Amino acid sequence: MNYQEIIRKTSLKDDRIIVMTAENRAVLRELPDLLGNRFIDTGITEQTMVGSAAGLALRGRIPICHALASFLTLRAFEFIRTDVGIANLPVKLSGFIPGFLSDGNGPTHQSLEDISIMRGIPNMEVYAPADNNDMVEMLPQIWSSNKPSYLRLMHIESTFKHSKFTLGKAEVIEIGNDINILVYGFMFKYALETTQELKKLGYSVGLINMRSLKPIDEECIINLSKNGSTLVTIEDHFKTGGLYTILAETLLNNNMTAKVIPIAMEEKWFKPGRIDEVLDHEGFSTEKITERILNKIR
Amino acid sequence: MNKIKKKNLEKLSLKVREHIIEMSGNGGCFIGASLSCTDLIVYLYESFLNINKNNLDDINRDYFLLSKGHDVPALYGTFAEIGIIEKDRLKNHLSVKDNIYWHPNTKIPGVEFHSGSLGHLPSVSIGIALDCKIRNADNKIIVVTGDGELNEGSVWESLLVASAYNLDNLTIVVDRNEFQANMETEKLIPLEPLVDKFESFGCEVKRINGHSFDDLENTFTKLPFKKNKPSVIICDTVRGKGLPSIEKKADRWFVNFSKSEIKNLIKELHGEGEANLTSDTLTVR
Image (cartoon, rainbow over all chains, first blue to last red; front, side, top):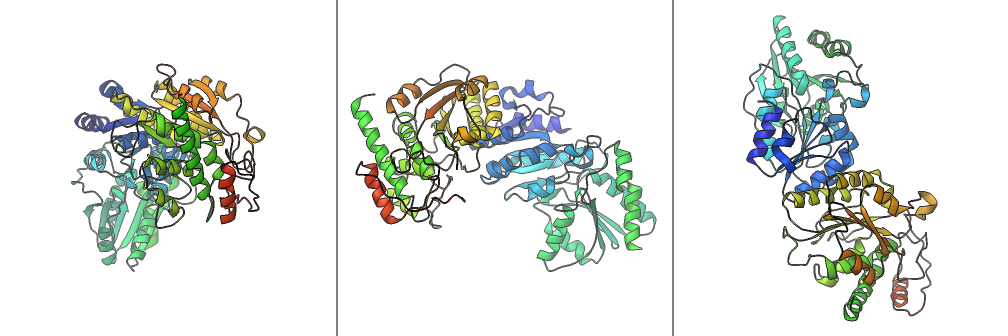
């Protein structure tokens, strides 16, 4: 099943669902014919789409809004915060090509602060699945909740078999005694490969797929920090306001501390290009991440 | 409009204006923008909209959304007069014990949606109108914007969408009092020719005297003006209408009057001489 199939299945079962887009149809192509007037394309108008979604939600609908992650969260930010957030309406936002997925577009399209700004809105939930399978596992629960939410849409397939999703819970792949990697979204694949590389060198390494950045699985973070291992956060997001920040906040809130290695974009946008080259250039390839971690713990 | 009906509306408007004046002290309010749209709001709730204290949650009710926000004393004053809220509640203006502050919010019965940030409710109204179309429901949806508010690009963006989706159940009413916060609109960001602008965005437009109940009745009862087109009604109004001492005065945007000034303004409202006002307008709001 892919994104379009799950949205089709959900919307056919639940006529409260309205599929909206600000003229991004890449993963929605079959839906206009299928949903008729429950498919609404507002054109390149992120603000109007989100404001209208709030109006639809006032009438009992559950709108799912689509646009490129950067334009959805930035251009329409105040509409999300003011019309959806203040009113606490069940508007579901799906941002395309967040983080490194916008490989060749350049900084205008790079959504590297979406987690930070979305989680700053009271009532808003924030989800970032690791791959298509993970997303398909998560979406039914996200869409059936009565809360507003932001999704980092992750369409890339993988063969990894994810466990069942529970709202607000991370997926603990395994727990390590030396190093535990916390990751979300696109970087999951590379974090997984990194754990394998580090294991080859004899380290006991764990991996956590965060899935939900807000609410955060506080219990999971507390347990990890208790075992004395080095925690590594990996994210295709600015270091400010993302998982590293969330980890720091969670530890402080619980009077705890930990040795943490943040791997994130630091105060800059990434160099656009073909994805593998981008990852290598920015230090986010499996090889580079492994090296960065080893440099810190050796 | 027959004489009895008009007299009743005029009486109601006077009472709502009294409430607005009462709210202009002890912390103050945006009095000018409230007085300019009082007649419009009174007309709509008393004579036109299918909204009353008993149907506020009915899915078939009409929708009224106040996008310009600052003029909420006119809305609350009207709510008090038609029984949607208790008149006594207006005394809670700016008390943290209640929710009657400078912008509309849904903790007050009858408020469909909060506003304050300009240029939002046209798009929220589009969502409501779209749902009514999907359900083949004939609710009327009225959204009031200020004229200064038309500076916001989101208003024009939303008109493109309303027009594309043939939302003839949506009416945008502009309270054209010719002022934005501190300036006359035409001296800052000129809006005219406003009718042409709305027409070119695909709307059917009428321009009327927003203080004339005859004009209001003759226009609103003809909605929608054209099948498949959103309607726009530009109401030419006077900022501060009813109080010559503040009418059309750029520095009477936000006011916080003393008790004696309020007493004198109520006298002025009833034609008993102009009030002598010494309180400064507070512009940092």
